Amino acid sequence: MAEKNTAAFGIFPTRTGAEHCVDALLAAGFRGDDVSVLVPDLQSTKELATQKNTKAPEGATTGATAGGAIGGTLGWLAGVGALAIPGLGPFIAAGPIMGALAGVGAGAATGGLIGALVGMGMPEYEAKRYEGRVKDGGILISVHCDDSAWVDKAKDLLKRTGAEDISSAREKAGSSHGR
Image (cartoon, rainbow, N blue to C red; front, side, top):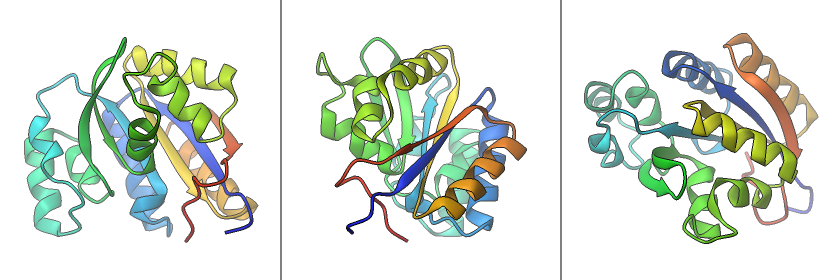
């Protein structure tokens, strides 16, 4: 795709707020593979990582009972998995951010969450701010959008569902997720 896409980002202080946001995004027409979530694995949610790429309602139900409040919602997203980010700890990730973290090598000195976010097109100063919020237990949600109307829609849904530090960034070539 020749045109660069834009990603909208927000931080949620609670799992419930993040779950409501993902539900609202999916109901508004965003695809599961347009939405990324990075959740600190503060509880025993290893069972959730085995629910990779499920789209079946029974998988979402299993995820909800095995992984807590956000488990069912993550079960609808692409590429759910567990990972450890050096200096930050264990996380459950879903969507394109999972690939971005794997692509930069989460263990590399220049990688980690900041490297993944910068690689996705976010300015470094914002990536550092988001990493700090995630380190403090915040839940990062990013939404990949095709045009400015979808960016506005995503930012509005992020705001209405309780996101903080909402921003957007042009994605770099090769990281687009077309509709």
